[in-house]
Length: 331
Ligand code: KG4
Ligand code: ZN
Image (cartoon, rainbow, N blue to C red; front, side, top):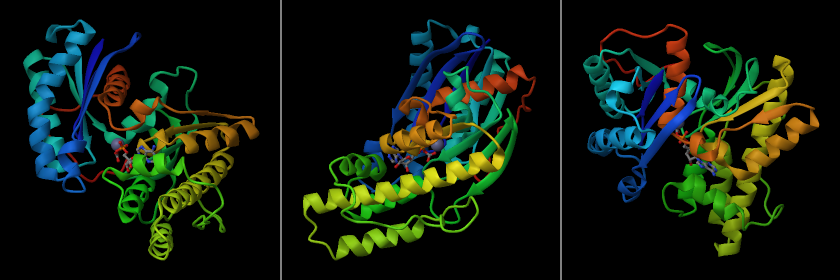
């Protein structure tokens, strides 16, 4: 069973083929970063147009790489939400049309479920139950995964998502878009302990997060600093340490609350090197383990959508023929 996966929820066009029982056959991601960089953020209308331009060539390229023809596709999975509505409609329209023409099932996948299951795609040893930390530009959530499709929200951010905090902080410090990875790269040159920011909401019980105050702390520190290159790196380091520490403290709490040994990390911020190292150390200390997807599968991609779709199709689930997308959608 070859499942074609299509991701167009934001500024990445992702396509992949996942074969049940075999694994990932091919995948390709086209990033619109350069297009949006000149505006300092994603422009929804331009994102939709670029998905229209790129999606079919990317499907062709991915099938060629997999050595498959359209006749070999047994199902089409696409991101049905949450995300930018116009961008979602491009993927949904193409996926549904293709499925209809090929007379195969189409399945709309929740973008965050795609992220959540991504670590399992290349790591068959990780199986539910586990706790998942979802950290992207739009979400920061701790989820107890009791089984595939059975998710319990343990905690989430009350304001900014962790990735959003990275991006906004980077922008404040005059780093080019997209800021998160740039800020993380800068932090590598920063010295630890020169500045210190708070670890929001770790001083009280609970599993929710809040990152907007941290951003303000950085703003004030940056504004009053000498703005030298080393200072900028030192502030970036202190910011990253605060976010990483906060996430690690809450992850440990979540594992204890859920009575789990396994932590799974997903979403774009999961590509952060220091976060990976910190969570690894925490899990080892507890005698448990942590599973991350490869960095390329942490950020938006078609493979996670193909994989989530494959699991759902294998379980006998798929939707009707209507093209429906859900820009706001709880998992
Ligand atoms: O999952 P994703 O590709 O898109 C969604 O938001 O769904 O995540 C993107 C987010 C952005 O906020 C980006 O700044 C952040 O992930 N990000 C990082 C790193 N790489 C990507 N944040 C910190 N360190 C990184 N290395
Ligand atoms: Zn995402």
